[in-house]
Image 1 (cartoon, rainbow, N blue to C red):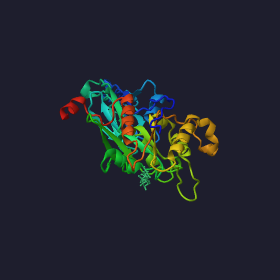
Image 2 (cartoon, rainbow, N blue to C red; image 1 turned 135 degrees about the vertical axis):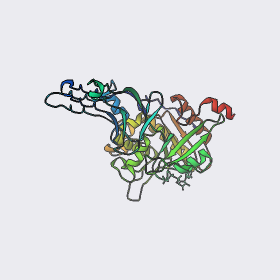
Image 3 (cartoon, protein in one colour; image 1 turned 180 degrees about the vertical axis):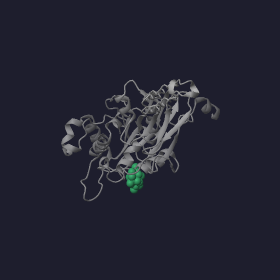
Image 4 (cartoon, protein in one colour; image 1 turned 90 degrees about the vertical axis):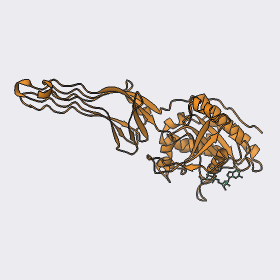
Length: 362
Ligand SMILES: Nc1nc2c(ncn2[C@@H]2O[C@H](COP(=O)(O)OP(=O)(O)OP(=O)(O)O)[C@@H](O)[C@H]2O)c(=O)[nH]1
């Protein structure tokens, strides 16, 4: 049996899970000493939660990552009290934690419309300041997407995700309660010999048509944004959502899962992804696995197997394809090793503890 297949690599790493921005409140307006007039207050800079935005979109739209609010109006004979400067709104996805450069937490965005003030506008000049205005607050802030887990399981119902999570983590996975979600992901912790822990989230609810918000479609897909990497799980024998829906082979299932992510947010496909092929304990599955590998290697030759609108624009090239059985434990150790390697290649894990702490434990 081929345990681990390495199929040509895809360029990963476009997914943006943190961003550093320069923010500055607007300056206050000048007061008018002659008539005791007061300058307008400078505008504030806010970060506001909006679902349709991603950190990558912010980065692409504002390459210099500078956000400056409007200055307050000077006081004049016609308007003794100058107008307030315009506020600047930075739209960001929910599930963000906003901190200053030195790690002070300014606030969290948990739900659509939540706001965090990141830079205050300056005061307008008045009698108390000899009519001189003050400048707006200026600083660097960080927006960090709060990760649920290192790995997120992506698979249609019945693929064996829950079974896999239990086998991998040797325990009943815990239901995590995050303020920014109504969908409760199950989190399993995989422990390694060097005491490193890797967290894996099972996010229930992905079905065909999820991108169009079928089932719990959008809720599920939003969560995929909050894991460092993706673990696709397919049943080697294929999948059928219901007797009314067509049967899908393992290869078609991979394509459909890819298409769901692509249609929701193509950016998600830039996350490193590994493919777990489950139920390899069943008879005849070795040949099916070989066929799947062949199809994955030559995806363009098999586009006719699905209707055109269900074929992903770019087939996902998995760096790691691991055959397992969640029931018998076949391939589970290899999978653990592959998960670890994949995360190590990409840098720190979401749950990584400082090495000093781990050494203390040892
Ligand atoms: N033969 C075999 N059956 C398996 C394996 N893994 C899971 N199953 C069975 O497949 C069925 C679905 O498994 P689950 O772990 O509930 O699958 P799931 O992907 O979490 O399904 P949902 O909760 O519906 O999303 C159950 O009957 C499992 O016993 C496996 O490795 N081999």
